[in-house]
Length: 314
Image 1 (tube, helix red, strand yellow):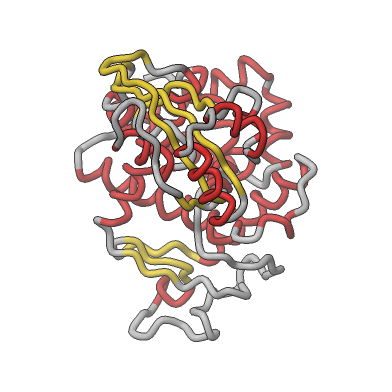
Image 2: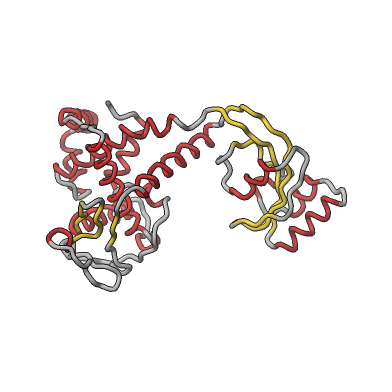
């Protein structure tokens, strides 16, 4: 199949800087370091994995028995760093980016292995069509210069397109499960910095003071404060603060929660109304789609045998 326009954006990001979207996902923190592209990787503590020979001795990870070489990793790492620099970011600010680059390489191996197990094959002429389409759109010279600037050989470029097309085989099925309509709750909240402040807020509400007026007075959530703490309508998985979402769905309309702690502070939540089948707004739909992809990737990793030998210092 041809890549969709939105997926072409993803491919472009992947090709330019080893999937910069990986920077949004978690991973063990590993500080930046300079390393020889051909240098062997080591375990934390500087030791090679025991019992490995050949390619395994020069591996940063082994995925279901398939090694990812230090050379391949360092080339990908260099592309990531160059991509970040081209966008004006300080690489040292990225914290866990080395692990994130490795995570993406691991997932690329896993999705390629999954495709092979299911008999999914990307024809060579399909890869040719994608490359020729890019050349037709941007010109041969531009593509060649772009490959050189990103440190990609022609074969590496083909493999990037190959992996992107494999991802494109699986993602539509993953995204089909994301609903376009769902049960929604309409709720509001008051956010403060300490438990004692939240308990005072709760006492004021229980004494009969107006929830919206208190929110406008004391809430630290600048987004909702001026509208009385109103969070609007949201489905399950649609709110950025899961503790508030869980409380809102667990109560009846008109009920007010106790003090709820989250990473943002301390909340008092009030449920206003429910809608059993409301259309999911585009922004929330995109968040749910990303959650579905992240969950699918996590399951892919959970079912795999993955050994990692990336040291904290590189």
